[in-house]
Length: 159
Image (cartoon, rainbow, N blue to C red; front, side, top):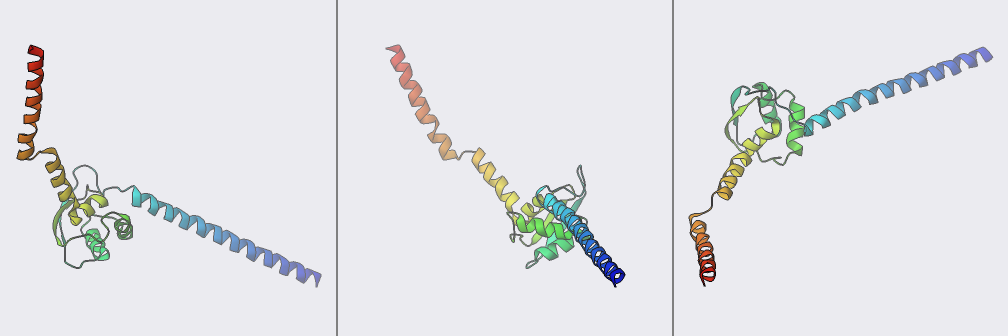
């Protein structure tokens, strides 16, 4: 009986050790996967470097992020559909994709493609243009006070 108890104890310990080893291996494996996804969500990279390949891509009215990801992977704009869905979920353009046909490139990051599909890229360029170019009314208003100020200084210097 003592030999039987010894074998049962040994078997019990072996099973527990094997269970712990399997759990540690699974935790290690899925921690690496989770880290890689987290890293790539916030450190996005393009499919290709340089100028890339230009692709005409169409988003239909009512397309979800899943559908867009499937279609983008099908034409080679992204490499990982699940990663793109997570990037879309955590981006500032979540749910803002508009129906239309877009000219995208494999050299663009997913964030850049989402910005274009949301219309944010075009709007921000327009806003920058307006901010850098003053209105005609502003151009007329600004020189007048400056000229009057300069003229006033010249008169005091001459007196």
